[in-house]
Length: 258
Image 1 (tube, rainbow, N blue to C red):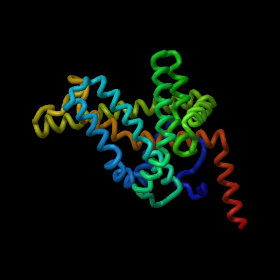
Image 2 (cartoon, rainbow, N blue to C red; image 1 turned 90 degrees about the horizontal axis):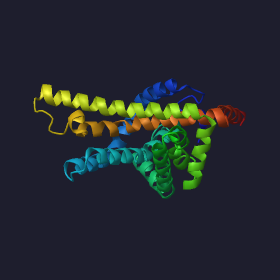
Image 3 (cartoon, rainbow, N blue to C red; image 1 turned 60 degrees about the horizontal axis):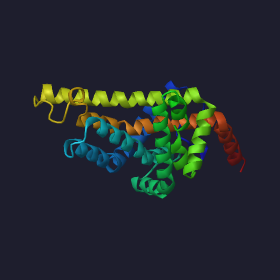
Image 4 (cartoon, helix red, strand yellow; image 1 turned 180 degrees about the vertical axis):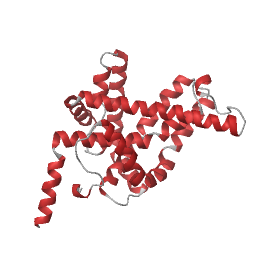
């Protein structure tokens, strides 16, 4: 990994700057790969949760739980893709999927442990902010640092403990992004179906039924942006705590000397 060739400047940023950078960097660098990767990674789970609700008759609440779990799990390939796009100009979908599958034996247990950790925090309520902050970077500590399941969760916990307020701010901001994507997707699709095509709401109404196909799609469409923003926040945290900016300068000086 050549840090001096990174497509973003590795420096400390506020959460607002991280979100802004995720939009600009994603639009300029990542969108072409995201579209291709989405066909392989996002369409199948979206079809599955749509079938669970419309075909298998699951309740709206259970469908959203399944959709949220799948939308979090399928972030893994986008984490790998975003990390590679930071330091490579051309990244292939096949290489991203192969790298993700290679890390699956350690990532899947780490993801399940983090999900259990966050669920316990949600049940206890008072511990929710701290537990969510501690489990925030499990994707990155497992997929990018190559840690096993327990070590990935421990590493994420240590990162979260060092800057709890900032990490919790990121978690809440990204939850807000997901909610906004769900509501906006339902509103846009509903407006087109009702007022342009005048066919009503054949695929459900978020406010009347509790779930709609467009709202589910909005949750999955937000995955690439959420992943990029969290990884940039992870890089910001690593820069502050591990001195990536100093490493960057020393590596550049060493190569210049050679």
